[in-house]
Amino acid sequence: MVSQTRRDMLAGAAGIGVVTSLGLNPGRADSSNLFQLGVASGDPWPDNIVLWTRLVRDPLAADGGMSDAPIEVSWEMARDERMQDLVRSGVSLAMPDVGHSVHVEVGGLEPGRTYWYRFKAERAESPIGRARTAPAPGSQVQRLRFAAAACQHWMYGNWAAYHRMIEDDLDFVLHLGDYIYEAPSSSAAAVKQKVRDVPFDVPKTLGDYRRMHALYKGDPAIRAAHAAFPWIAIWDDHDVENDYSGSHAPARPSKLAFLQQRAAAYQAYWEHMPLRGAQRPLGPDALLYRRLAFGDLIDLVMLDERQYRSALPCPPTPPQLDRSRLVSAADCPDASDPARTMLGLDQESWLRHCLAEAPRARWLVLGQQLMFSPFARKLGSGSGFDTDGWSGYAAAYQRAVDLIAARPRRDTVILGGDIHGFVACNVTRRGDDLRSEPVAAHVVCGAISSRLGDHDNYVASLPDNPHIQFVDARRHGYTRCTFERDRAVFEFRAVDDVRNPQSGLATLATFATEWGTAGLRRA
Image (cartoon, rainbow, N blue to C red; front, side, top):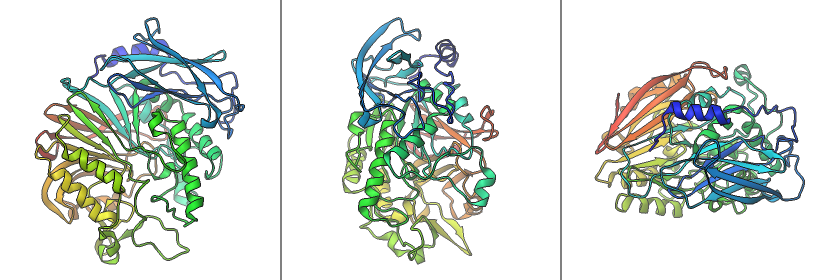
């Protein structure tokens, strides 16, 4: 639970440079500043948190402009923003095989407490970041607030959403995928919406993905948001390649070739995010699904819906790319095959255990990448579904819903992203009957800056989707989530102009769910 006021946090940030721009110019390297990519904290536990940085001399070089030698990095953590009351310190090695990134798992901390931290290497000193541990296990927590965000394409907007986010009183940021976008779009419509350029081609190698991540970290707004709050993150398709499914990519390369690309993308993602050593990839594999607890208030279950899934159903005839398509159920019986999986056998078994055991907290929150509930979309004179979403894995979807429905407390909230729009809806007992009883609330957080979804089609489809209360794909932003013991509130926070890095922000709509009563209502 946050104990500082927003005013206190901002005053501290102004005094110590938490939100100060590092001034990275993508076209100019500053070899004297090893901390051009900023600092971050993540995956807070009650007594432990991850501190992250990556050393670079030339951020857009494939190797960061660094030598092959390890570099000694010291770190400090304090109870105060001026770093006077030190509680932990140490030395780590920034190793070349992980891009000179540093992931320090600091233990022995007090639960539910704010700390400040910094790094030093050679004669350089990092900006000071702010971290916060989770409340103690089982401790009674009255309120938690966090931002849910996703989908931040560099080309199509500046990140005023992150500038405005640091003005919020948050415990953490929950990032639900598409931290980077692997490919610039060259369509005529896309070019008209372009705000800024990506200065290199589609990534395939580790050096390519490192450069893309470094470009994204070059934006001062995202560095400020990382420095201000702990982040809990999961990847989605664009962090590797659009619409990839497990070991299958849209252009149908050999399995070996794509797994080599996936290994490079996973490695670069880990190198640039405040993730633990347990999440470090081993080749093309990484254990990113995990569980975090926040006192007795929130049990957060993070799902990986990319790495283990079956290929997309009903693929088009080659040489067409095997990408997500809007298809009718009659034209895609493969989507209902019970052998198809979204999560893979091991993760689905783990989720079954998470949902079936005695509750660990007041609320169960599923953090996952996609729109979870079905969205029957207008297709000609009828309706269809996107093959990349959960509806392309209908039997696996119903298995997950059955587990949620079996929880008698009606305490489940599902957060998602991906479709580049804000959505408030219910999860119904039957995926094939959208008027059946609700068993959970579902919120899609919107897009930070990616090209917006098909708003007109979304709105025209609402009569076929009685479980959806709200959809808006005309604005960019994030969702502010506030959990109290008997109520959770979701505010769709939309920027006025995604092109303006200093844009204002307003609440587009607010929805709430009551503990013990499944579903959302307009607040």
